[in-house]
Image (cartoon, rainbow over all chains, first blue to last red; front, side):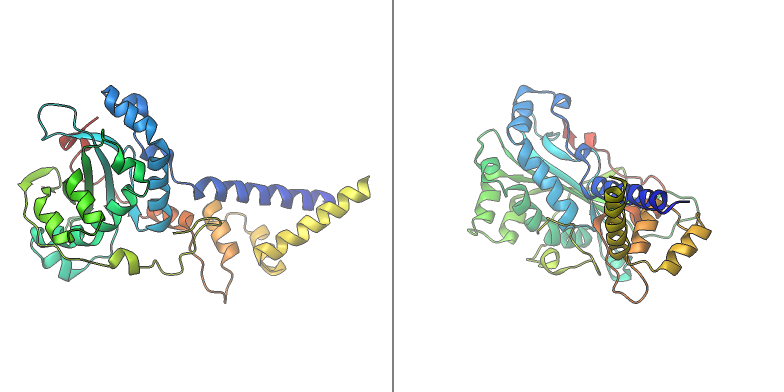
Length: 233
Length: 85
């Protein structure tokens, strides 16, 4: 093999690696619900108007909270199912939280596990969701919805599917604004929010939480994690 | 003409070797065992994190590890139990 051919091969390999890394370095756009899949004009308008904010939310979580997974169609302006009448649209975000197994966490009551997750994630995520002030300022946005899920820790037989615990949190816009402006603590906002619990596919109904101000998201770092070039958190 | 091309290829080749931090011995090992790396991602991770250096974990590495440790579709509430589009 000639030197030229070997070097040309190296060049091709380098280009392939760079392209492969570049492609994988960006979050998947399919995490955001496509505009054409909404069922109302109001939702389609919101999704179009705030498309940039949704993309930024997706990218911010992808790069800055790498232990969290956002799955397909998990970001958008959805209508809470429990709200009857009208077309209330909430900016919604669903995440799966990956964490190491912890006997202490597993021993907690489901309400306490839910309280811990709310305390850790709701404040920082709400700030991310409203990073673009135009979102909260839009009169067509009626509130915010976060769906947090995590692996339920339990003994499972080989071949059994993992079970997720989930909480769905619905925050009225005025309550979110008060919290984000620092006018009320997270405890007060939590007391006004509706929280639904789920054990796997089984609805547990509304649950009451005892939350606190938690700085986990601000302080937790994945070991040796290096941000992609050009990204800041 | 050819010498210019050759010069460019040599410069790029040297830069590549430096960027990859892989020794000639490592390249020889890889060439001798083309299936050594499980995937292109594993290959680029291995090249970047040579022995003795502090490991650098990229977002892509995390996604890859998550995919490889995936162990079944979980039982969880569906989106349409909670929200409408």
